[in-house]
Amino acid sequence: MKKQVLGYGLLACFYCSAFSSSVSAASTHISSASLPDVDLVIEGTTIISPIDKHQISVKANHWVAIEGNRISQIGSLTKPPKAKLVIDGSDQYLIPGLTDSHVHLKTMPGIDFSDANAAHMQSAFLARQGTNYLYYGVTQLIDPSNTKDGIKRFHESGLTPDAFFCGAMPVFNGYNAQGILHKHLHHERPYYLAQDTDPKTTEAITHAHQAKQSLLRLKNDGAVCAKVYIENGFDLADNIPMVSEATLNELTQYAKTLNLPTMAHANATDMQDIAANAEISVMGHGLWNWLEEQKLSTEAALPPKVSGVLTKILNHDIAYQPTLNVIRSLTDLMVEDHIDQTEYKTVLPPWQIAWYQSNAGQWFNVEMHKDWGKPPVELIIERFSAKQINGQRALKYLYDHGATILLGSDTPPAPTFASQPGLATNWELADMHKAGVDLKGILAAATINNANLYNLSQDYGTVEKGKRANLLLLNSNPLKTVNAYDDIDKIILRGQVFDRDNLHINKLEQRAPADKSP
Image (tube, rainbow, N blue to C red; front, side, top):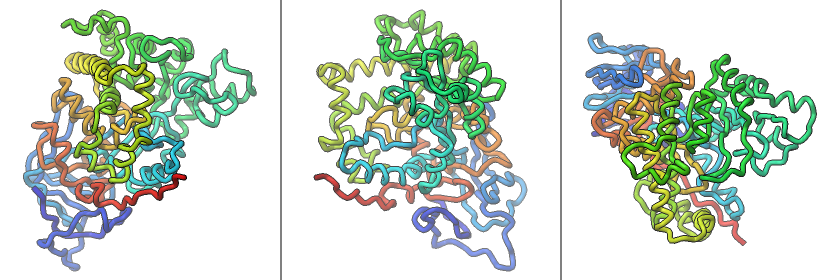
């Protein structure tokens, strides 16, 4: 149910006239003789805020006052302060804005940069992706392989969530650095890790890319974590150079002295075992690749090696990003007419859907089918589905045993159009719940767990005095249904109020890029 907005102060924001909250016909003006004490009050609402990863606070019939971009007061028995804008939050639920801690902000999902219209499509997407995330209640983002300058460009692109980055630390020719000439690596991957097997370069460059030096540099640049890549090849392959055990251990131990979390790209049993032994802070993927133990995947008990790795994750208190979106979006890419689903029309303009449906837009589908050896599509879907079940079982085991679970969708994980900003995050929450994470755990994973892990809890993760005013006003109770995260009435971003409907793709100016084809 839509709530009436009482009083109205001009919201200074990007495309204010298009995005800001609508003024009700029942609005009343604040007398000039009675100056407001605060900018915004949300009154009569139920505040649902996590206490920790296990406990949730529920406070009925409360008001929240906001000054600038901060929560200034919270109360129930006392009268709220006078405000420029008053929102009636009765029969609604106020929660912290969501944090997706695994996104990639540089590229339109599924784009083919050889396409004649690629530059125009990319530009239109980058100007809009922030709003797509906000439509689904994501007010904070962490890109685990970006830079200070990249995040600055994102924030300058338009209306965006608050974004942060982790410094990517690949090795030469390793995962996330394949195909980059060594002489270009310092520029392309400014925090890469030098190893003894690298080609010769200047002493200054070699020194700058020792583990400790790269860590210091990325921390000074404002990174909230360091990301390493523990990947020797897909599935059973062993054809990608890896970071050495000595370098990895040096990195994780020194990062602890800097109070800097470390994240590992790893999704196979052997790779996650290496990450766990190094006491990484965050497992940046779910454990869906069970390697030779896949033959045991239909048994009731988890395979021994899988169980062993999950036990290490628990014993070392390693936070865990299930990233169920990875396999889900690769599977859905193979499903005929998947892009026709109604949900895509909340974030994608008609021209982008039409391009995805074209032969040009199906390029990654064709390439992936070819890489699989062109078997029947049904067989590919069946194999992907088996891996997804692996990931779901690993997640349930960890959650049931008290692990710290983080919302991280990995949007997009590959050039798949089935992973779109905001929508993929929402589907990730639904898939986590389906796998066995209860609704308290879902809320914690999307809010306080990420804030605590990435040292952002002074600003985010809870509804408290002094916290940044990034909030969601929901029509449904998120402790009753996971669908509440798709039943948002208003998004409060840095103290500014947005009706969700005004963030729908239909309300954005999204003209088709000019056709540049020959």
